[in-house]
Amino acid sequence: MPKRCIFAALIKHQSFMKKNILILIATCLLLSCSNKNQFQVSGTLTDFGNPDEYTMLYLKTRNINEQLINIDSTYLKKDGTFVLKGKSSGTDLYFLADKDNVFIMRFFVDPGNKIKVSGSAVAISDIKIEGSTTHDLYNEYLSLIIPLQEEQQQIYQTYQIYAQNPNIPEERLQYILEELVASYEQLEIDIENLTLGFIIAHPNSIVSAYLVYRNSNSLNIAAEIEVQLILLDPEMDNKFVSLTNNIINKIKQTEVGAVLPNIELPDAEGKIISLESLRGKYVLVDFWATWCGPCVREIPNLKEAYQNYNEKGFEIFSISIDVNHAAWLDFLKKHELSWSNVTDLEGSPTANQMAIKYIPHTFLLDPNGVIIAVNLREEALENKLAELMP
Image (cartoon, rainbow, N blue to C red):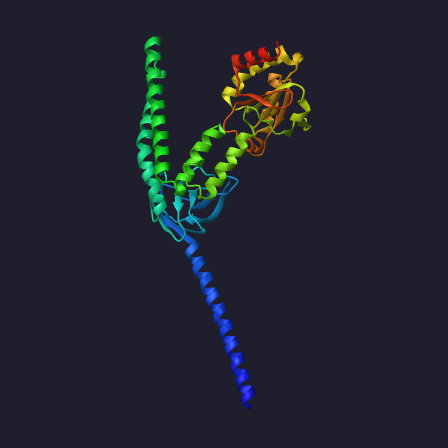
């Protein structure tokens, strides 16, 4: 073979080898990264499900829309052992749960962790979780507040015992109950202070971001949530920071001074009713449900307010979050609710969009749709309407 051909063949061979080596290196790097992001959760759970049947155990997490999603699942073996796997590029909070989330336990996982779980499904707080340094930090937090929560539980049980005792004089009973409530509320303050102290001590931890997010679900004023959010490292960027900011934005849409976003939902006949169609009137937007005791107890007050002020320009826009459509329709007929009644079924998307965490929840709007008061009930609603429409 001529030398020129030999050199050309060698160059082609070297080029081929170099290309394949680069491909091999890239493949190894990809596999290495993939393996590094994988994690495993295994162990033994006793007293889980029916011992005579195969029970499915799920590994779940929450997405950015706060919905639980399945990552993996497996049948729990007869001896309670299981193995579940997942993949994550960063530390996150995961859950072990049954199909309906009746049993659910949480734990933090770092990429590459091999988590070991052991304990009884009927004593979730005693289940041992090993293999995650982030979860170890979360356990440090729990060790601070669980004793206080146990004290609260004891106070609650004591309260129930005294409240149901007919032999205690009324004045004495009132004093005892007030003391118990004061003790319970003080423990609540102590828990809040411990939580804030933990966040301040660990501003870079996803555990702290989770605690801020968790706290945001019990607060209804955006500024109060923002005060906690700024305790975190400003460079922190994870799912819980995003979720907290989402809640803040939702709440700001429903605070006094904001124009409540328009709501369009079907009434009992299926006709779509728009909140904006009531502009020009004072409107009480009322989120409620037939199964909600406080909501039902408020209905006589709403009826009286509607009777006294409807002709002066007052309207009620009631939004039911009932999942039982028939029960809602029967309730409307039985109680003769003559104002605008619409239904927000299928998981209460409107209530979720407005970060409404409990019912009854009301907004009083001026004729331009601006929120002028939140959660007025009984005499407070009557007094406000009397002031607006004398």
